[in-house]
Length: 271
Image 1 (tube, rainbow, N blue to C red):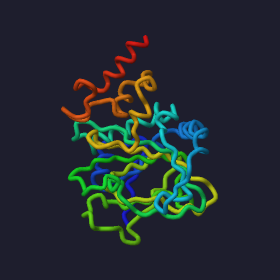
Image 2: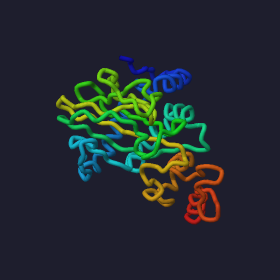
Image 3: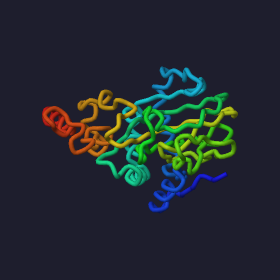
Image 4: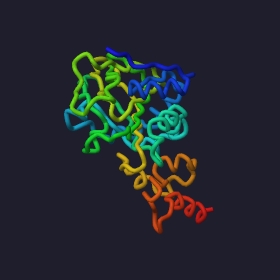
């Protein structure tokens, strides 16, 4: 069994990048303060009751995923979405592309009694053969402690380098146990899956996925957040949800213009 690489909040960026390249995953312990995690939980609380639980074995009847976290949680927006650990990892893995951005952010509740999730690769969502380079970077923020008892996510270190027809064998996966305020980073090609919650407490997390700009985002963020909804956000954050060119001639708006111009025009019209 290969353990998950672990870094402290005072991590060396080179160590972080090396861990992702070599193992396809790592944990940064105490990446943010526990108070920020409490704030995210409080901000998301009004929205979770309207969210259905999973309706398939894979989605999990004991799992609830509430979306639009970037709009619903000011704390996530201000402190987690473009946290330095995300930018360091994303630029390392996805910086070869003309742009990369947030694909979705969901608030996960893993309830007692939930079973193990199938070990999988997130790139399977594209329904296409494996890409020659990594196209996804995923972050799982621990809103509560992650323990083996409450369903800490299992990862298979180094599986991001496997051929597409190889599957994990028993004993190759390891629980990414981590304290509240930590973040598990893993690539889209890494095999992983939620653990079984055999305890009495709900395991809480924010799952943020990021992708190269020329692939569809999992959430239609520009539909959810039109210019009037984000005009007062930080410019870099606005671009991070998709208001940017995906390539030299990709993702234009209107007359071959940069989509960010829509934000600028709204601001000019309402100042």
